[in-house]
Structures are given as structure tokens and as C-alpha cells.
Amino acid sequence: MPIKVTCPNPICNRRLKLRDHLAGKNVRCPDCGGVVPVPAEGDELIGKELAHYQIISKIGSGGMAVVYRAKNLRLNKAVALKVLPPSVQSQDPAFVKHFAREAQSTAQLDHPNVVTVHYVGEEDDYHFIEMELVDGKALVDLLRDPDNISIAQATRITIEAAKALGAAHQKGIIHRDVKPDNIMLTTGGKVKVADFGLATLGGKGGERVLGGKVMGTPYYMSPEHCRGEETDARSDIYSLGATYFHMLTGEPPFYGERPDTVARMHVKAAIPSPQAVYEDIPDEIDEIVMVMMAKDPDDRYQSCDDLIEDLELAASNLAPAEDTGKIVAYDEDNDIDAVEPAPPSSAANAIAAAAAVLLVAAIAIIVFIWFNPERRKKPVTQAPRAVPQQDEPSTDEPDAPEPKAQP
Image 1 (cartoon, helix red, strand yellow):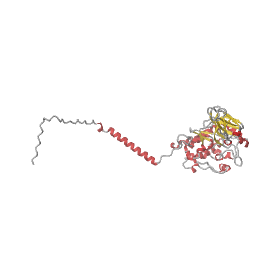
Image 2 (cartoon, rainbow, N blue to C red; image 1 turned 180 degrees about the vertical axis):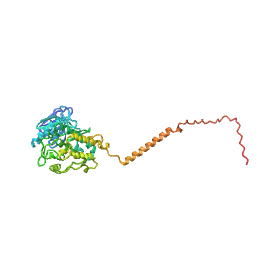
Image 3 (cartoon, rainbow, N blue to C red; image 1 turned 90 degrees about the vertical axis):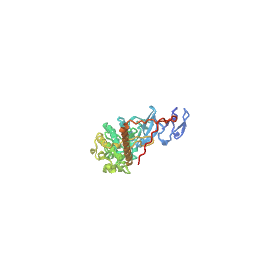
Image 4 (cartoon, one colour; image 1 turned 30 degrees about the horizontal axis):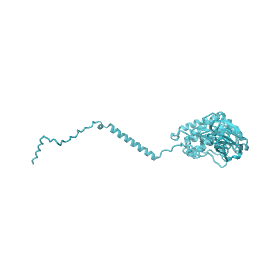
């Protein structure tokens, strides 16, 4: 594939099409004469052009594709570009079907909690999907420190994700890969469900995990999905329940070194109670998770609407201090800019109480002085002191001395 780069000179911006042997070297721009660095082979597409996109940096990668931060050169707009490399296509042609299915599934959804698909294309054996660039990070990044998410925040994230899945289910689309990696959190506190690469219409097209190829993430997959059976909306609800469990407790419900071991646990092992891991979880939330993750789909919530109703009721019963008013916010230097505030310490409470007592005492003194009756009396004005005259002798006779008392 020819290497396409753009001159870094903002005045020039000349597009160059170079041969592969120039990878990792510097070339001169024929227009401005500036130095143009050519990305090395190991950098994949970073710095190169694909169709009408300039690849800027890598956002993440999954089992099939790589997601890049890119610039749509036609619209001069920042986008997310999901690319299926030719090397993956050569391994299994079915990956192209899954990739096309994701584009078709997501394009049908117009919901504020679903990552929007803008364009689908192919060039030089690269299949790609242009998507909305989410200004934020994936839930999986937040879960690296379980203390980042409070019970109230975990509940609100689950509610928003359930709204996105409910919108997909209404169109007959089953996600089939609900997990923290595919739930995005924006800087404004919104939840976006992404990656419908394993989505199916009407639940058809299940792949086996037990004794076969893994398609999906076993830590969050429903028992019927693990068995390779057809899935429906209740399978997504199970996976969302496993994700909710992870947010509440800091760990997935099952863990094993091999994917098939984890899959067997989802099929056969009893679901652990979230309260058994973290005792502060309220009873109603513990019960919601257990219903979401019931082994039998008939024992689960039958729709996302039913689930959302119970979640919103549980959220309303949580203490207001547990929520900060937004789910999460990011900046460029810190993973988390807003987290649940810590409760005030006993020392802080004592200081606050003492300050309150002093304030009341000060107010009482001011009121006493202001309304004191003595303050309202007219002050006595002293007569000016007489200045003695030095030059004029007094003409008055001096008073006779008083006779002394006889003994």
C-alpha cells in the first residue's frame, strides 16, 4: 500500500503519495521544501492517509479492528475511524461480514446513547467505518480503579446503557457483546454504547464458545451465548448485568485463566451475590443484578423497559450524597476529574460545630448592643473647662474660713 502523508507545514498542507521503501525516513516537500517525516511500518496507519482521512493516533483495538482518531479531510472534522486491516481479512473472511454487519446495524440506530455511524468505505483492501468521535474514555478504563465509581454512578451508567440497548432491541438488533470496553463515557457525563460488530438481527447467527471459536467476551456473556444458541434481548440484559456487577464490586462475576473455563461458569456455576463481595450494596440493587443474570432467560427481565423501571426506582432511594450530579468527567492529564466526594471527617464536623456556636454568639452580642436601652439615652455634654485669667486680679472677697468645731 502506498504511504500517504501530509506536509506538516500548516501553510502548505501538500499531500504526498510515497512508496513503501521510504517508511521511517524523512522526505522534502516539493512545494515548500519542508521536512516531512514518513511513519515507520510498525506505526500501522498513523500519520498516513486512508481514502479522505488523515490518521492521527490510535484510540484502541479489539479482536478484529483498530480504532483511530482521524481527520475527515473533506469536512475538516475530527472523527473516529474503525479500520479492518487486510491481515485480519486474510485470516478469516467472516470478519468482513461481521464488520459490514456492525455498520448496517449501527446505521439503523439514531439514539443519544449510541455511537453514530457516518460513513462506510473501502480502499486498498482496508475496510473502514467513520464514526462519531466520543470525547471521553471507555468504562473499562475507569474500572482500573474500582473506587472511581459509586453505587449511584454505576446505577446511572447501567440505566443509560439499557436505554441504548432498548432502542436497538426495538429494531430487532441484538448487540451480543455488551461489556465495559464497549460502553463509552463522555466528558459531559453521557453514556454511549459502541461496537455492534457482533450484532445480529433477531438473534440469529450465534457462535459457539464451549468447544469452539470464541466470538465475544466470556466474562460478560450469557449462558445461551456461551452454548452457541440463538440470543435475544434477554442475552444483552444478562451481559449488562455482568457489567453492572463489575461496576458495583470492582470485579467480574466469574474469573478464569481460560475463556472456556469462564464460559462454563456462566453456564453452570451459581451467580455470586454482589452483596457477598461488597456489603454496602442495597438489597434492591443486589436483587436487580441477580434477576438480570438469571441462568434461565425466562427468569430475567424480559425487556430493557422493565429493567429501567426498577433501576430508576432503586436510584431514587440512594442517598443524594452518593452522586455528584454527573457520571464522570475527564481531562487530558487525569483519568478522573470528578468522583464521589468523601464524607466529612469527625474533626471537620467538630470544627464546623464550633464555628456555628461562635457565629450565634457574635450575632447575640450585636443584637444586645443594638437594642440596649442605655444606648438610646442622650449622652451628657460636659461644659467647656474655664481658662483662668492671669492679668486680671479677682475683686471678690475671699470666703471666711469655717469655724473649727469646739471639742
